[in-house]
Length: 292
Image (tube, rainbow, N blue to C red; front, side, top):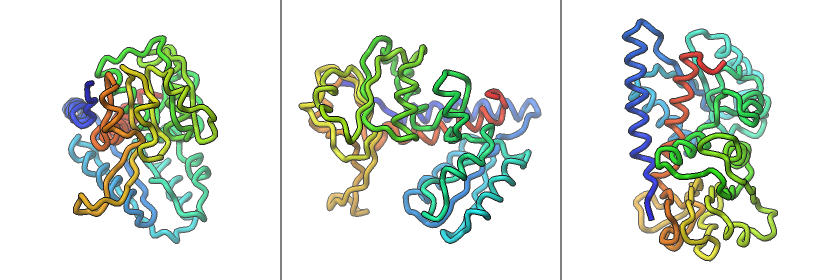
């Protein structure tokens, strides 16, 4: 069993991005600029955005954080999105999800200029990705592809089972794994909460990507020997073992599944660090205007 170390790979990519930014600046180019809009004070979102801002500094990007209280109107938020669309200095920006109930997330996403949509959520980016055209791929699936690539994990002709059908991970992941590409060229099965025979399907898998948001869902009796397991789950569960009073749990029961795997990602330290670094990569691409 080999552990897929997302922390180490993310640090490696961070160095690569920082070097490229230095070269751009040395040639008299523009420093890439990422802006983030944060609404309210959701704990997870606060942590995630703070981490993005810190990583921007580390790779040499300019970053802006725009904050609103949770009672901000949809109209006001849309106005700010349009303002960022038209700001030539901003190369890419994100609106941190989830948003308060009175704001339509879809409306906000669709208003973002798809050429600045470094989260890869805009329908144009999602559509281009599904037919294999250059686009911004959403950060978590992009990070998973990078892990598979850097560990030289064979994917061609393999049976890949994706657990989960969210627009952010499950659907794009399934689409990417079936494309004529490396990593890709898989036969893909998508399972979700309504799938009847999940265990039987998982037992046929060469690669399992678990993105259900259901702690320790995947157990040892659901996987065969030599499987590659990528755990996208990060659920906070109460714990008396930690100072914070909670622990991050993945969708995989790691202690019992790991021994059967050829490769497996841990939680934390697997897919998580790759998500932020993939966003940085998208921002670099946006800054270079290489996608559109």
